[in-house]
Image (tube, rainbow, N blue to C red; front, side):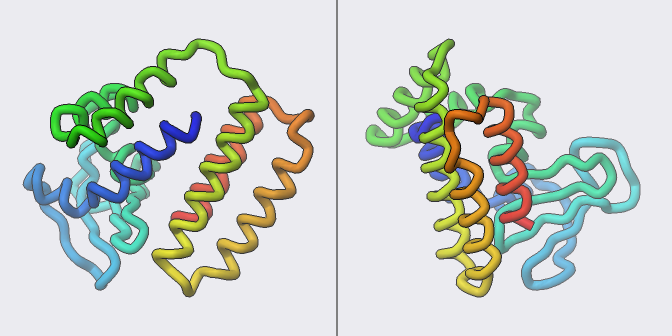
Length: 180
C-alpha cells in the first residue's frame, strides 16, 4: 500500500463511523457502555449478540466469527466487496478534491509491480501516521502507542532483510494491537 491508499483509508475511516453505518442500514444494537455497542453479527447467523463495536476506536470485533476491523472492513464484509470496490462507492459522493485523491489511489492500485523499498518506506510512513492519529484521539494511550512506534522503528531499521509478506504481517499486528 502506498501513502495515497493510506490517505484514502484514513479519509474513509475518519468520515464514516461504524455506529452511523449501523443506523443507516437500520441494524439493531444495544449500547452497553458509553464507548461500546453490542449486537448480533451481520456477517453470520446467530441469535445471541457476539459483535462489539468500540466507539472510541471506530472498530468492531465479532467473538463468534472473529471478523474485526474498522469502518472500511465493515463495509467490505457487509457488501462483499474489495477495497477498490469500496473506493468506487465513495467516488459518487466525493467532492472534486476527494475525487482527485480517489483517482490517484485507483492508479496506484492498478500498478502490478511496486519497488519493494518504496513499498516498505511508504508502509512505514503510513503506519507512523496511523499511530499518531490514534495518539491524537486518545492521549491516555501515549505509553502504549510510543511502545508500538519504537517496535515499528526497530522492525523497519533493516529494510534490506524485509519482504512484502513480512511487512504486511507486521503492519496487521501493530494495527490490531493499536485498535484494541
